[in-house]
Image (tube, rainbow, N blue to C red; front, side):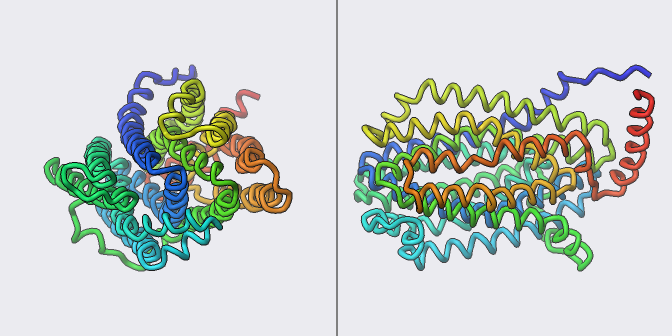
Length: 471
């Protein structure tokens, strides 16, 4: 029987519907961060470095709750594909509960013990003082950020990707406007400096949540606002949720701790290096923003098909998503490298900090293509029900290769900053090869719905038959 051609036009249009709004949303967030950095840069490089290190504490919080986002999206996508409204509502309520616990914990740490947090990330007293001042205020935004992320995950998996985009657009506009008012004391407001930037962030997050809820209500979204149906869990459902999510949660937590160790080493470099790293992290968000679009596309386009029992469609989409993501990320990195001079100048980089920031962009430009391929594969595996393979590989290589190399080069041998920075990506090529083998062997397809489970057995039989005929 002649094999049907892959429906590229339909595939690309579906990716565009999901990935483009998500990419635009993240682009807006990154643009807001860049404007933040530009405004804070007028206060000095020490302030830029301090806020950059505070962002690393936010990243640690991200690692704490992102495991629940990844696990939740697995359930959202497969239940949506199977048309199981009750499953979507219960899994969202459980996901939100776990995520909010993480947000409240980190928010309390930032507000109540900011000095201890800053001492963990750097040994520079001036940076510690400024960062603590920022954290005392911005910590109130952490639970709001987590709530916003939970809503966005549900809306994207249920094909309402534009609502989080509008929420982000509102947040960026609010943040930039309030930065201008509160940092510099415009329109009669007091000049609050770094505290003004933090207060603007808190207010922008609150406004974004209000906008998302109002738009969801207006559109009649039947999951986000069904509060009474979010908490009807039983023991069997909780056990299934934990079983699927635990590998993802452990992965994100252990990777978060590993990244914290890496950031502690980088936070003990020169002040110019700390400032350069803060600017680089903002630009990295541009690349990750586009990647997040493909990540969500893989979760939805693959996960829904697995849940609905369309296994062959899920498999044929998966590997194409990986290569499309890598190609687009490569183009973005090239563009970023070509425009580095005006971008770094406007973000306050000069002299040694400029040289280091450009070096980081060049190193990352090579590593990102492989890194994002790994991330897309891992997200695809998770959406299809395999939360273990990518988790084990990421944890093992982080702690066996990356962390030891960074510690040796940065703390023991005191090698140049760019060598230490390059060690952060030393494991990516090895993991890529292993994950490619797993991708094409299709062992990652593990449905949680009855429709998917029944279809998988039939698909495996047909695949074995086709392989036998070809040999």
